Image (cartoon, rainbow, N blue to C red; front, side):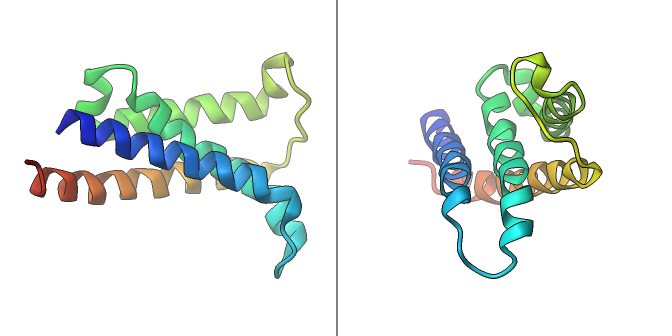
Length: 120
């Protein structure tokens, strides 16, 4: 079962990375909004599942996982990429980070129950 959860987490991390990679190529509706915020959303989503790889205590309480992920992505935003990367701050970025982590939390809860129900 633990192997299935790690695989599921990896799939969600890759999903977040793929969204980030396709962001510059997006040509659908609301291109300015998507190009401005899809990166924040996708990375926030992926960071939630990255945090889960680290410690069983965080996995036991999904709210702690969500809190840690939100702190990491918001600190990145507020410190201009930890001084390593250039970042353009926009107050809406913090809201989009929250939405990305919230969606990850909801999907984690739903798919974790599904994973437990289908364990071999």
